[in-house]
Image 1: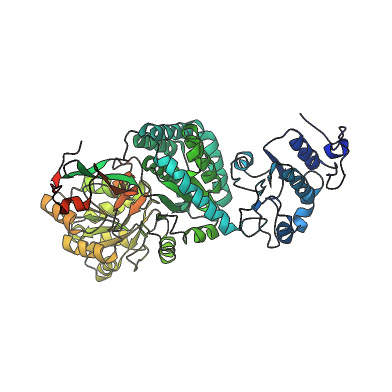
Image 2: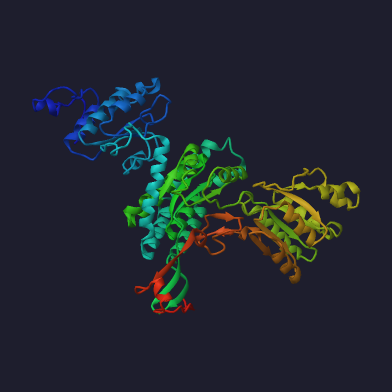
Length: 593
């Protein structure tokens, strides 16, 4: 039914001859909505305004109001001048609170939220609303301190625990069910591409004046990116990594020991301004049966929100009980709280700047996996094929300059300076719009006068670079000259980030020496650095690239999100039985099916 203020309304309590105390005054649509909600015995009422909810004295939204907890609520509630009289409707926030409490006491949950917020209805009808102030019909748990609302820390911790609980449901799904979720998410990315790109464009317009080109490139979503994401998700859906037997042993007769793959548990993944990372990460977590807490950059808030909704929709289509296994975290304060939850979160993977990764590593006891810098080198040996070399350098730098696997430092054998081949490299880089920054050795060569006039003319007026540990993330690179391959390897060891390194040479022996001698996560011979990617490695997607040496290294796909457990199946065996001679140890390795 549709009820307006000018309709004849009789308050139920008064109609039944009851006391008019606590009867709501029918003076606005909030009151009418509350009465109608109670009369129709609905589960939840959503009251929309132009503010984000009910504020406390610190101008923070109160997220949760328990049943029969008026005293504590009144202590925290503060009608701010900006919210006392709303610009929409009549009566302001006070009338909404009155209506909410009226309905709450009669068994109706109420959410007061901002009607202008994206996807406000979907966010407020969830079991635990993701925005606004939630007037719950539950009372505080027995023995708990009476509070009118959960603090921000408590809300974040509760979301993490919900993710862990729902993660168990996800991990117990069959391979077919997890594959169905991944295929559904792949479908949704294609079907809702228009809406996704629209939200993404709003993010870009809101931040394009404040972000560098490299950051904007990471922020932007396109139809080809969404298509690639869908393809990667379908690739993930084609295999089941859980319950895979890694080893099998007959310990004794009828006593079989196996080592099997299992999820790590709860992952906290932090990524900056890369909305395309969200479905990749979510897909890997679903495929590996891990619960997931996601924190994206504020620049991609709208994009991340709509993508997260699609992830939960895909999960809900197959297993509603596992929907909360994927949670989206918003503020920095929430991340700080999560970093203290080593009892709930099993692994943290930060994807972003060096400052971000170091901050995470220094402020948590949770194991951290990832890389701080992507300073990738390409070394052109004197025995390289120039046509091949130019193609690899161009692709490594210009295919996606903002990527962590893009070329940042180009190392040139000194012979290429004297025989003129360096000029061809510079011409190609200039044509591609790449700004070449000259390292100290190159500048010394120019000033010494030991280079051809034509090369000197090409090198003059280029910007200098004294710092050899720079990740540009743009159409820029550092140019340095080395004496030979050993000198190049020394340069990489001293100035690299152990991410991805490339040698271009026709000398197979040198190529093998470089592959074995360079200590980085990915080392290539005659191939672009851009191949350092989970999808291109056939992993389906990647959760990030790790330069660590423990657990996972390089592009981290499903295998990097798994651990193992030992499964022992016996027939009443006891250790004492072996001591008594009842059993004897066999320790025979069994074939893995």
